[in-house]
Length: 228
Image 1: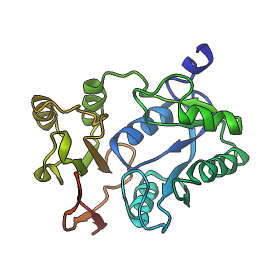
Image 2: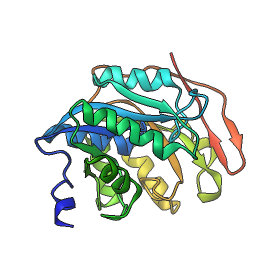
Image 3: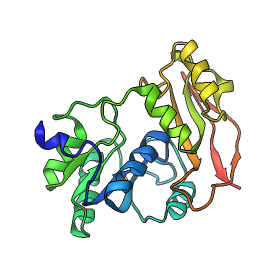
Image 4: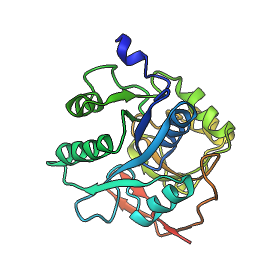
């Protein structure tokens, strides 16, 4: 446990690779880690066809636009769920060969040891850094907003209190209060929603996006974004 806690605040004084979804938690974790360590790149896993990211369903050109604005290369690969871990480990090995010593993730509530990221980093010989680990969810969102990041709701779970008209909304202090009043975790840690970050202190310039037609799939609704 002591070894893990040494990395809670990110990759202090070390080079790291960051697991990146393009959403608020991974961006805030990257921001915190870059304050104390040196990022060498972003890991983004894609669906089998390579057309959308596994985590937030983002097209590769939008991920690349985020990475370009941040100024970091993308370590990416397509994978099915059955070979996801093997492919992810290969990307970690590549990052380690290029100097990475730590994998940084945006997890808030994962166990200190025994979680999936702990498993894959140990397999490669990297440390695990979780800058947001055990943060209060409301405080994490408030810090994100106060820093000046702008993020859009792009996925909602309609069975968990979210609505179709939440799609496209920007996270603000007022909106966070509304979500909490509706009984929704302000970080969406229960799978209530996902976001895409389009601006903030890590970005050299904002990402101009066009909102496409909403797609429904069972209890989920999605707002695809394209570069404008």
